[in-house]
Amino acid sequence: MAMLEIKDLHVHYGVIEALKGISLEVNEGEIVALIGANGAGKTTMMQSISGIVKKTSGDVMFLNESIMKANPKHIVEMGLTQVPEGRRIFTGMSVYENLMMGAFLRKDKDGIKRDYEKVCEQFPILKERMNQDASTLSGGEQQMLAMGRALMAKPKLLLLDEPSMGLAPILVKEIFNIIEEINKAGTTVLLVEQNAKMALSIAHRAYVLETGKVVMSGTGEELAKSSDVQKAYLGG
Amino acid sequence: MTAFLQQLVNGLSLGSIYALIALGYTMVYGIIKLINFAHGDIYMLGAYCAFLITTYCGLGFIPALLISMIFCGVVGVLIERIAYKPLRHATRITALITAIGVSYVLEYATQYIMGSEVRTYPKLLTSASFHLGPVTITMQQVYIFVITVILMVVLQFIVQKTKMGRAMRAVSVDEDAARLMGIDVDKTISFTFLLGSALAGVAGVLVGIYYNSINPLMGMTPGLKAFIAAVFGGIGSIPGAMIGGLFIGIAETMVTAYGSSLYKDAIVYIILILILILKPAGLLGKNVREKV
Image (cartoon, rainbow over all chains, first blue to last red; front, side, top):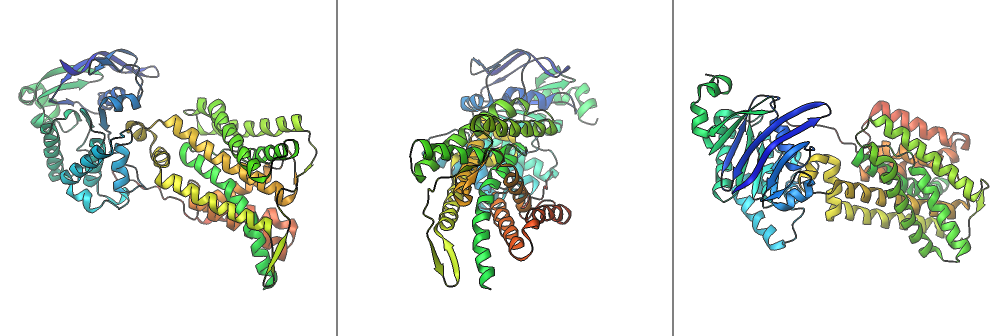
């Protein structure tokens, strides 16, 4: 049974159709990658799943419940959290406060404390900077903060939109290692990336998006070997 | 020196009132980037509300103050829901013009219902005064100052320490990111209007008592001055609004005392022009800076 099942999803911005009937699924325990060029509709896809952008037609099922009309709050409550593109951390608030924003809807104090300790363990650099203003963090640290913040919501499915954006190659590697760790610890991951090589290297399965449509799908390995994907996204 | 200290005391009480109004401007701007020009009129409604309660229901100062706060808070929330919410994704100028429209509606609706004449405010607080060295301080000034300080402390606590306050700050930084945390943005915006309008209500009651008279257009000038106070302190910044309010109040009082009362309004606008030229972000304004 798929954890997230998207069927023929259409999304419009005014008269422009950004997603033209996308179908995909994410099974429990998987890392699924969505790759594609700028403007392919990757971010629109993520925002519509999270309920930030209105879905026009089709169906999106999460844990066997349709979230076509659900508001973002309900979607977070159900266990679907997103690390948005560009990290979007709350500047002017401390690192600690940012993390706690992730746990905004939770009431289980003990659980929050446990997850906080887990995040500290996973991102030791954040622990050192707990009381600093989040805007003083470097790009890589901000990405870790955004991921830690999302984990504080205790998600069943974690959406990651361009986690490697603007980061040095060595940091990209570290971030992807952490994504694999998070997945191994039991969180299902749907990942959007322009860095197709990195994404395909950790993904169990992947979809290639082009101008609002899925044009290819397969296992990470299959797609990495495919000559079309290599030509278009892997620079060779 | 004595005269100076005396004027400082007077300036502090006037400034406290400006600060209370400025807080509403700055909080609303912080969260939806709208200069709510109807805010000065909420303050006027606060004054009228307490006037009616004390005159016709015979209630005392504290109940009148609390009821005015609730009344203004509710009116603020209704205005946001009816007039501003449908325009949240419209251009900023549309919302701004709407705010001016709402301001006129409140002013002239009050004039229609209550009449345009100036009303004398009931004596709700003792007019006793005492001497501190050479300076005379009235009990009213003490009340105004103490109430303002208490409200500011409470407000800082709400904004910094409570869950709702954290939600307010998160929404003001990044609305969509806040949504992704599961924050109910509409509710948070309503809460901001509730707080800001309740504070304006308090200012209205205090001014009624201090100056002894109210009228339906009383909100215009103090509203503008409080707006300038908010800009001076850095619009969007709560401590900035407090400092700005006190500064504008003291500046106005000093100019009245040492220059001429003819210039007391002019000085406030001169301050606005200067701050816009010299430090447009205001005293404690945020320098927008982003890391990519």
